[in-house]
Length: 384
Image (cartoon, rainbow, N blue to C red):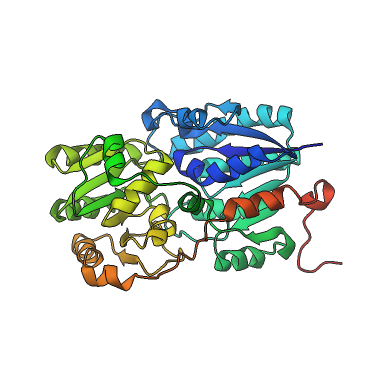
């Protein structure tokens, strides 16, 4: 019998990481794939990215409307509850052999909680990492302890998961699956990219990817310094939409206002994964607090300025320059990042987050790991 593997995707960000595992699972002769879509994928405000999934040809087994049209932490909490209600019925009917989750978005607590109650084993991608300035850090660790199979991006993350008293046979260092795009796809040329974006790329150009700092009471407090610094940065600025977190609407409005004051600034609601990677390759630098800046830019040796608290503690490659949420500090870090000397120093660097073969490793484990009670029942350090 085929293994029934359900996969949850809640946003454009996690879908870009899940694309190649999904592609390989869907092609595997011994797998029946059930893709469940929820969260901002179903929101027109955040680009209605379910359409991208449909264009990619993945059959969608379930849709759960759960994202409240809200800009508050209460809205985030209610989203978890609404998602839990919808997923209880859906997963209760589906009963997959394994449920695959990724990363650390707060709404992932809903499928994990439902799967726990329904005794559905959970496999989790990208556990063991650290981001002390976001609630994602606690979510990630909670998902690790609720999961039965673990796929980490780095060796250090693998050690952290084992240190959380997870049995070593359950923990696999696969790498970050988003890096598989560079190995398995051909990126757009500069001319093709300009046609897709409808703009002419300039030199220098910086990608700004900035999200609310969800550990803070005021999730956009650091944004004042960021936008003040951007106002004095020379060159083209290209903004990506923030995550659907408390404070995202504030950041969107600030970005829109910024773009209206500068002809060389642009804001994009949603970029499909191939366009995004192609854009990264054409940039002179990256600025913000996105995990993409930490995990993906090293593969392109792209100078990146990481601002503030959000990614504090996360393992970094040498292309990352940390900057306090202060206008002068950010401007100084940007000057360093854009210098020829710094760019030259990055030649030959490696990305600690993987080598582009994550999907194959993930699928191999998911299709061979023992099922049933052996997988569900975890044993701990002092085993009798």
